[in-house]
Image 1: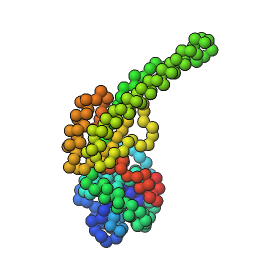
Image 2: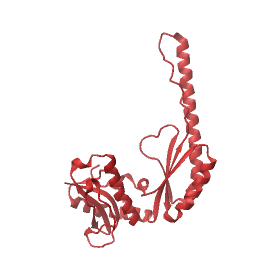
Image 3: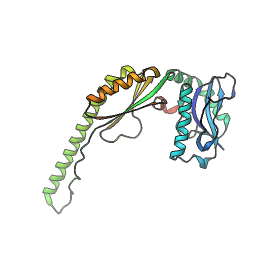
Length: 245
């Protein structure tokens, strides 16, 4: 059996050992019950599972997200990346003991907050495929190829500039309603696509939505709002501590 870690929260019981999960917490991945391991004022939400049952699929991802969202509805949570695994319970206790101060500071910064996401989509007007740069058409083919390539680069720069301008206007309109803002991380986004994430106090969500609707009406770009979510994009990558994955 392997211990799967869902997230870290402040403990509502000061005693080390096993804590009671929040009421209504759904089953974890594979239907396994979720429990809390308590250490130093923090709790780690975990379930035990056989490794073959961890292979990612839609149902398992939804089960995992459901646990994180239920924790988030009850109190501030540091969500883990799917697949943060430990062989033994003592390793989870060690994680909380070693990184406890760091996790507690992060949780205090997230307390009372949710994540709102905004995706920006600009039309890229993909051009036709580049002409073949073969020898059959001689110099004319080479000139056409280079001309098309230059036009493609110019269009890409134009789209990137327009996208940056939209993002700047969004931040000017919405940053004042957020505690923190993060740009999309990870793999490089497709041309004409950008994501922003805003850490917003729960009581400010409706004001944030209204401000988004005002800028959405004024922008030619397509804007998509999502949330509120647990603060997935406001947890540092090193959150996984000594877990595998």
